[in-house]
Image 1 (cartoon, rainbow, N blue to C red):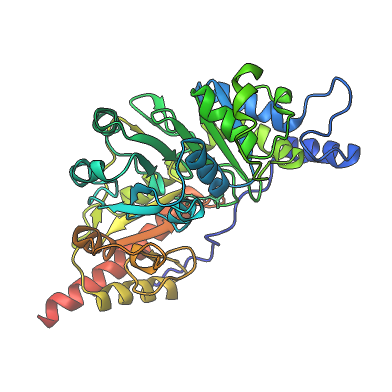
Image 2: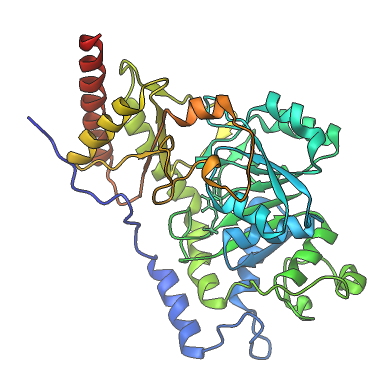
Length: 401
Ligand SMILES: *Cc1c(COP(=O)(O)O)cnc(C)c1O
């Protein structure tokens, strides 16, 4: 029997009814701009910031226009400017080196491990080259954050976390985004909460957050925020900090607030799907699963496995066979950038020496989305298809040798 999967890998769930009702209220009163409030009214954007700060245990939170805007704002707020060098993961998505380029800085890429996290030995060796690390928890994989922070603290390197895939996740019980000086999140459609576009920035650092708020385009209205440092922190820096408009509006904030309340329950549903897929892919010859450390509280909105040291033609054959049966796999090893995937050597505005370990790992990374519109039975079916196709290609190659 040849099974085929007919689901859609990019179809998210609808916005919850509570979010739709809140959005309709904003549309009806028309005050979409976050600083356009009626007397006594609290803006949805300000309430969102207050609630997210409480959710992750941060003193301060700022809502912005995108995850990319959160990262560029964080870099600027931490003093990164033209000509500076910023450490970052070689395995990440294009908005991360893009944020570094946006402030005129140059990425220094760090190798990735077979666990898909930043290589801490390579990081340790490269720490003297920069004062800031933009750490990307790419695809939700979290490195040993205790060791990373100890290394960076000792070297005086500021850590900014890219939590686009780790909203709701944790390391040793500490929410992702709360280890470094600033944590950046995305609320774009393919992440853990969905407002189309949007971003959140959290920090306990009063000065960095005050700068971030002015940078985001607060004008002199920062006192209307509810998760901001006190006005005296702004007294001097407001004269020195440019306004680079990247605010979030009340419509998006209204949609997001109920989704944030639902995040822990949604995370559990994602992880059920992840475990179903993982169980179906155990003990496939030639296929390596990524074991998740006990300290990592992950939110699996996507799934990765490795075909380590397979040749490119064999990987392409697996992808083609799975695609023919409705299973859309992404490959980070492709030479040419495609859809959302690209490699560090495609980012030619940020040239770097080759990274041999990263090349080897990327050549084997296969990635698929796990939208919550998939049932557990869908995940089991997807696993059966991948299992059969990887098995067929693996056996075919072995027979040919
Ligand atoms: C999506 C993403 C971002 C940026 O988010 P946007 O809201 O799309 O700007 C940053 N880092 C990673 C790893 C991402 O996947």
